[in-house]
Length: 285
Image (cartoon, rainbow, N blue to C red; front, side, top):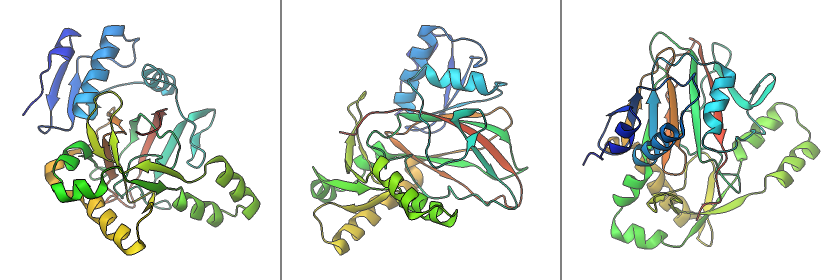
């Protein structure tokens, strides 16, 4: 069932849903200009409804990108990802002949943090002629689609999250074990509920992902692995997804608490250059 559009209409914006539950294109706003409070409120309401919003033809610079993110909260500095020089809050994500795309795993960002991000805003700078789409999955719909027996099995359980693949990258980059141990102390493994209750909507969503979840606490490894594999696979069901084809000036803003995403890496050796700002979130409940 499509959701009402009244909040956006009140702010003189328009919304074009991409599926019944996830993804909508927003028009009628210029993100290069300061936004009125009612416009910010309408965008936030739409994000809660649709989990990911898309904006086309936005000619903004880095400072305007940062300013848009700050309407929704403080911004993270990612300790492992490459930063834009002079802008520590901006992730510089470039893939080309020497650096293949590697975000092609279903995931929710930085769940290895005690307080994972509220959401991220990704801006296209340079794109391949074809390919490089991003898919998004509605993990609240995925939760609702679980069998009652699986819901009962995961009710109240927690899983351990860790930055394991970044640790591998740090070693590959030549970091010493002492340096890695400093990262371990700064970002220790953390337990989050398998089913997260959204702090603003109250909706329940699957909150484990193949990139950062290690195991279910208190469960035998074989049982944990099998259950996690089932939960991970829910993001790959097309009925829970939308797919975004990037164009110059495109921006995606996703709710990291209720969605997962997958950057399709089908464009090598072409260049795909993006920048991302990420909004600080709260501890999952």
